[in-house]
Amino acid sequence: MLDEAILASRYASPNRTGFLLESLTDLRHSLRGRGADLVVRRVDPVRETMALVDQSGANTVFASADVSAFAQRRERRLTAACRSAGVAHRGFPGVTRGPVHRLG
Image (cartoon, rainbow, N blue to C red; front, side, top):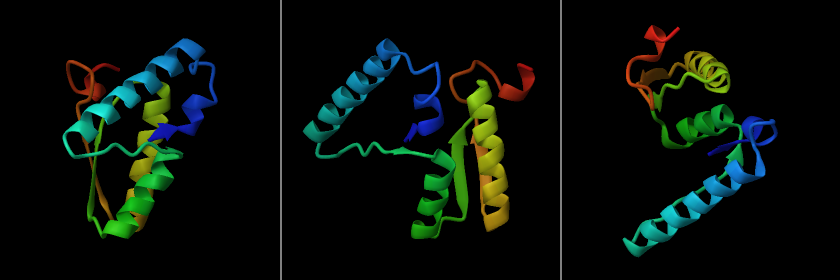
């Protein structure tokens, strides 16, 4: 999922966005060579995650934690949406060396 809020922000520089798109294209090509595929959507990640929960009947959402302000806001929104839908939300360490809550 490509987060519309990030793509519309000042952080979406042409170089950064170009690198991301080239990387996703390469990953998709590699996956297709192995009989799989990659689906990329420009969406609100919380809305899309909850739609997938509804479609699949999932009872838990698993997600990587991150330290950026965007990620923290998104995680709070996801936690609230999961709580409202009666779905568990479990976060796991992402790209940081330790738990996000210890970095603050």
